[in-house]
Image 1 (cartoon, helix red, strand yellow):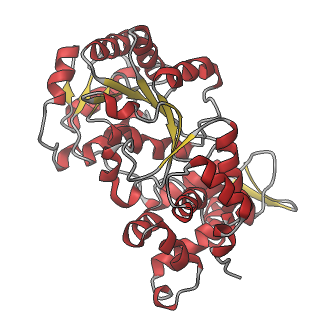
Image 2: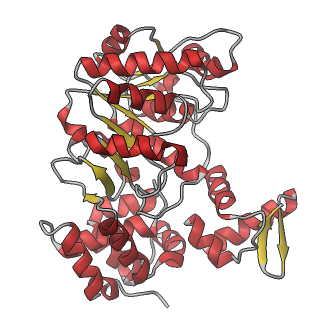
Length: 392
């Protein structure tokens, strides 16, 4: 049975939490946007297009109210199958309560502090942003640069990242990164040492420090700048959410610089998003014998990234007004591969899980989960037992 959106909109506890988070916005709008953030995985284009076309409240009605006019739209019907496993008033209420407990702010499209660059993502833009720290940090600087790179960075890479981040801070730029070990951490720390503001976009909830070893660093980032995420508090980071998070880093920044990246580094994914958005893209060259720089060299060789070797080069990169063209776009993974990544994140090697549980964890429909499990079983990567499915 399809749930009625009114059950969530009229829940007294949900309305109290929404009023506490955003007393300045219409409660139905706040609740609807939070609901979409709970129901969907980051970057769900079907939900994004529906919300952009109709607004969050009417989109909920169309998706779950059984509107006859929309029944023939296959994308909405398929999307409903993905979203239904997460339709639970308690989950939406829990997202708001968790934010209130950790004093996270709720940032919505249309707010003065909303990062304007995220709107370039169109239907893949986030429904909400959860923020710890100063929600206005992204709007204070006269330009924002994303500094990203390998987690397993070399001393050379961390030195360059720190040098660039500190120099950009001195010139009034904001540094954006992902809070990870390696290049991200070096960039954040250099900004803090320089007395500036920095912003970290996380793949999990803002109340979950990840990696755990950066708990103190992320607390310091939130103390002067901001830690942001599009997923609700308490949400665990997964491989898919890291890849989806990278689009936010690229979109919020005016330019992206990859300091070090291996051949399969997630930083190349961020670079691909920056290129597809027409953002200036820079890469730092390294030793031709260094595996940590193979990704940067590929960006320079095949994707028209600009070679940057100093802070002056990065500032010059910021002045580029033209897009990078088709040749600069790193080919994205196909939707089938993306779904397998999401299902892989949801599977456990120890605890067997039923398709409904996997659908809820992955944000896929039950039918799609069952179809993908069949493919993975043929590949020998999953097993079905009495208690459900598990990863081999």
